[in-house]
Length: 117
Image 1 (cartoon, helix red, strand yellow):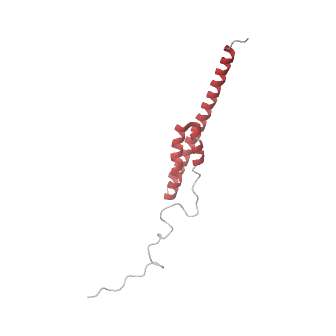
Image 2: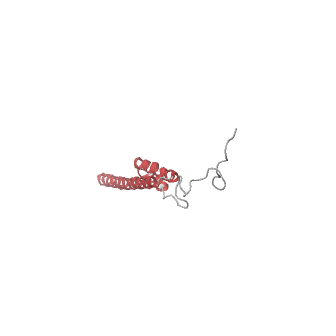
Image 3: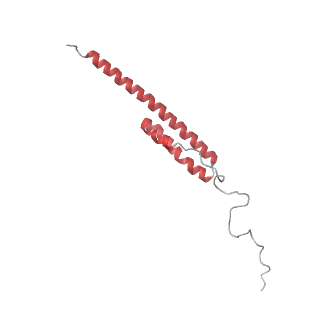
């Protein structure tokens, strides 16, 4: 029984390496992921937590999407995180100003309605 000639030699070093041309998964070598803004999203929880939750969720997606090679998805998640963080800070600031104004008005009414002796 004859098996024929051996198969031709594979790439140098053998094994299953990355495909030629640098293809494969993940971001290009040497590139860094965009800033995910997670710290600001967490700080925004103290301003207006209902709008900070989507910011945190999107901020945590940025590095994962970048490492999977989805640069467009990572940039979109970063944009969404920034958007929700800004909304949380703006609405938190507005509510703080309104609350302080309400306290100032109630304090002024209380002072004006007390009898003077």
